[in-house]
Image (cartoon, rainbow, N blue to C red):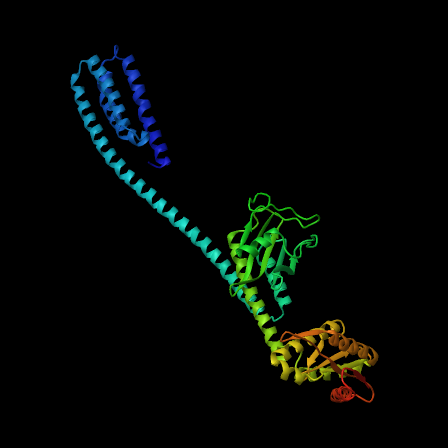
Length: 478
């Protein structure tokens, strides 16, 4: 209750008082027979010393020590009064009793006041501790908020990066690299896109942060198929303890203990899966899963935009019925191919194909039957040229042009003959009737005499009409 230095000072003072008191008592009793008056002279001092002891004892002992001192004083002064026969000294006991009562009242009030102060100090300390706790929580919240803001700034930049890309391959690679960079503890990131025709997952991009074995399962494992089927996010803290999956890794497959995986959904359709693996247990938190889901949303939108752009581009350059390029794109591309052949002194051939009597098919069976014939012939042309040409165009209503880089006239003629034969052997069912179609073709090649794209087209067109005049169902070569 009182500072220690005060207690030390008062203890020394009390000893200074009590030691002479004890000495006086012993001396007084030893001199009582020879000098009885000695006790009479000592008694006032004893009363004073006991009074001081009564006053100081509560401070030193912090208890009701003054009553103990009063009890000792009562015993000592009673014995002395009886020994000397001077009973009027007992009056001083009343004085000491009054001092004791006053000290008791004062001490009690003092204790109550100090107790209230102590309680107030305790409450203040509790408030201070609560304020400190709130301050620490506020600092932790501010720190977490700063991290989230920084993360959101990064995501904004990443969103801009996704928006700037129109290649699906680039978008997929950016997604796995972003996930590896922003989510710590990741060893492997994988992105699977859905093959819509086969409805299965195909690995489109991957990123690993350490030297690990190659990914053997290119179509996903049990975890990826679960996400694909359930269309839900997945978090596995330990693959050996998760009761939902009975996972048996392939021989030599990369090792992992925990994973998070989210579906890539766009317009209620699942278009892929983004997944992270770690070789440690419990590597990912709920915030990591939520961040991965956010990256997945950005990637999903970017992939959908890239597909729309590709579709739009194809619609502007390709024929919607056959899937071949349109007349305008053919002319622009043929100029580049002729320039390349001239600069590199390489071969270049052109095949133009026309369906014989196509107007009769339209008049007899209708335009829908004519479209069916066009689609069938386009499929035959594509199958025969898949390895040697990336540029096939629908030149007119029933005319097709095939650009053959690095191919001479003889091989181009052989290709045109094979296409003609395949088409003539194909049976078409038009309005439940069995029929066949024939085509005529002209073949021309780039040469010293033909140095421009317009000249090459005109020469090929001339040879096509020559084949028609000579009876159709044949190939004419310059």
